[in-house]
Picture 1 (spheres, rainbow, N blue to C red):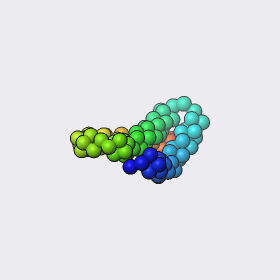
Picture 2 (cartoon, rainbow, N blue to C red; picture 1 turned 120 degrees about the vertical axis):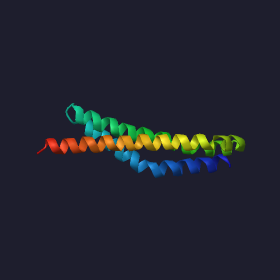
Picture 3 (spheres, rainbow, N blue to C red; picture 1 turned 90 degrees about the horizontal axis):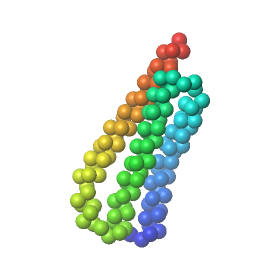
Length: 113
């Protein structure tokens, strides 16, 4: 894999995640405008956790591509189980972030009655 192929693949992976990252950034900006409290803290923590898992997931997707471009095929086969564990942990953290956002939304809606 040549450097230009790697760059195009990286840009493609970034392009797929970019709309979600933009939406999360907008959400963080909106939540920062809310008065301090438990709801704001929960929503902010959830949104930041979702953004962090998205960015780390992007980097983890790029790592095998980088290893292939470097010709380190043995490293990829040895790290397959590790990649699976990391992606599972990221999925758990992403689920927790989503639960925090839904909790904050539910609590805010109940307070608004």
